[in-house]
Length: 355
Image (cartoon, rainbow, N blue to C red; front, side, top):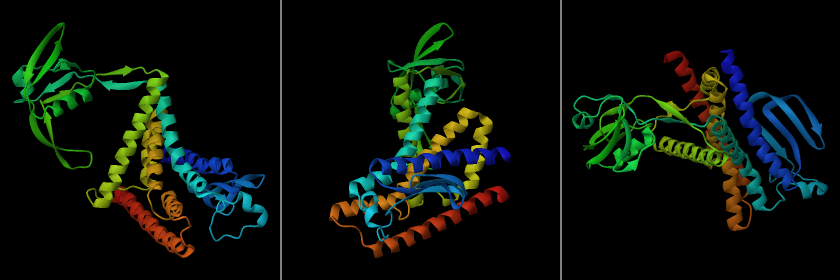
């Protein structure tokens, strides 16, 4: 329990800091005055005021905020503060300031993945056979446990995932599989068979397989800085894409809302990651950072995405969205977030006491 709480504080602290620092640094870059830079909400615990900015740690550690001068469109701004007022900046600068929070969360993930790939490399599951299913095309072709698949249709295979993609892409047409068995090499002809399996979302999909399982043998592929950077971008893209797909499926009802988790679930997962090692915890921070970025970009008023939507409308029509519309939208957005918080807390409690 102590590990989970400590890990949760670390994860949340890092994510909030990077998110709010993104808003802060771009705001300062464009000459916007920042009154408060807070980690946490609610009463101020302690901090330090530098210039006009109060850098503070607040009591409720479930978020953070950057309070800028003239942040609200209807705020009274002293004449001398107009040059450093957020509202009085060009709409393009306001868009960049608001977008900087999610962008910095994405940047954090890229930095973490880069560090992991540079120092640890990447683990590859070797395309070696652990088991051959009875009655499978692989067994009929004479494949055996311990065989190492080296090529399919003359194309070299370096890992298990690559091999599985080649087999599935065949759509059932016969393929030539090159195998290394002990010190001998051989080639067999196999006709993959269709099977219905479930994907990560629990949906039925059709795949083509030959009826083998991996031996579990792995090897570490060392990466130079350029390869590590490329791999970190690819990893960030794949996780971001998966998150977008999950949100879309939640909205459509393809995925149950019961799968959503809140702070308690994050704390448990952070604790499990911490117990697995520092690298595991850092990797978890990268995943949650991407999730935070994508969620914040949703066009829901009160989130960064809602503010961006209003600014984009302003950029197109040439004038700001009316105060009345913004106020009503903010209330609706707050209501949606409260409902979402109730749901995820309910899911967390249900998992603890009824699973």
